[in-house]
Amino acid sequence: MASDESVGMVEAKVLGLVSETLAVPAESVHLGSRIEELAEDSIALFGLVTAFENEFGMQAEYEELMSIDTVADIVKLIGKKRGQ
Amino acid sequence: MVIRSQRVAFFGKAVARQLDPEEVRRWSAMDIGKRGRWMAGRLAAKAAVRAEYSRVTGHPIPFRDIAIVSLGDGRPAALPSRLEHAGRFPFSSYSLSISHAGGLAVAAFAHRADEGDIGIDIEPVRTLSRAFCEAFMSPGEYRDCQSAPSSGRRDRSLLYWCLKEAHLKALGTGLRRHPRSIPIVSAASGRLSPAAPDARRVRLRLPKGFIGAAVLVRHGVCAVN
Image 1 (tube, rainbow over the protein chains, first blue to last red):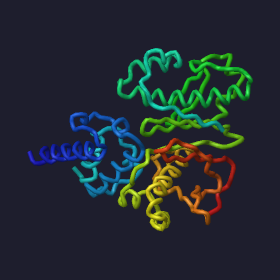
Image 2 (cartoon, each protein chain N blue to C red):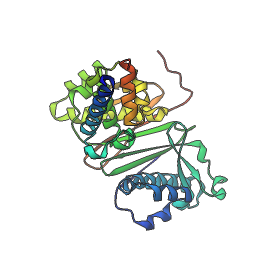
Image 3 (cartoon, rainbow over the protein chains, first blue to last red):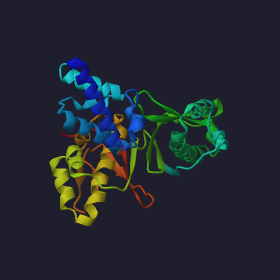
Image 4 (tube, rainbow over the protein chains, first blue to last red):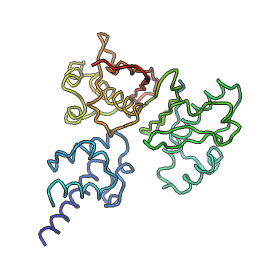
């Protein structure tokens, strides 16, 4: 189904972006991964947030982005912002 | 205020003697790859607390009698594991901040009424991208960085980050509040410090390869807009 594929594509993109931005092996990143545990330090965490803002054109409130706990939360937020 | 540091190393089971019972449980359940970093932060924090405890009370305190806990807002705090210490030293009157980066952990411990709330941030020396700098700095701060000699721009931009992050940690928000909301000013000498009148930068000495900052935020000082 188109919407499921879309969600699946978003998940894959998010997982890839987290892996690339935080320099973490792709096999170590999954939807349940906690962002704070993947990010080596505060610079990495802030860099991830700005990467998502740029990649997905998200106009989320900064506080909303920084309150994200897991990779799955990022996917949900993107879906919410896109009205899915 | 006391600042102590600890290199991340392989800490064997014997180091568990430095931990209170709850910390031992946490250590045992932790992923092995994360233990070194966590323990380094714990040891740095306990060393800072012990130094101040000994100075104030004239008594020693073993590391395992100092519990490092996390408050509701995510800030660390030091508490006594044994009642005998609680009566001697006002643990709750102190502020604690811990930072880890690239194999090093640093902790700062300050008396809240006398000095303020402390925040500390250290980073391994590295180049921040232009996009990253423009995201966390104000336009004026970015211009200041760009006007520095090219050999000093890398460290100056990192120092801007460390000052903002240290200030945010002292306020108890951490990165939940945007770094751009914490203005940093450059004195005529080029020295960077927080613009807020209730905050001051504290001298911090670090090993080569690290940049860092410590900021004290005093209470009861009115900010002038």
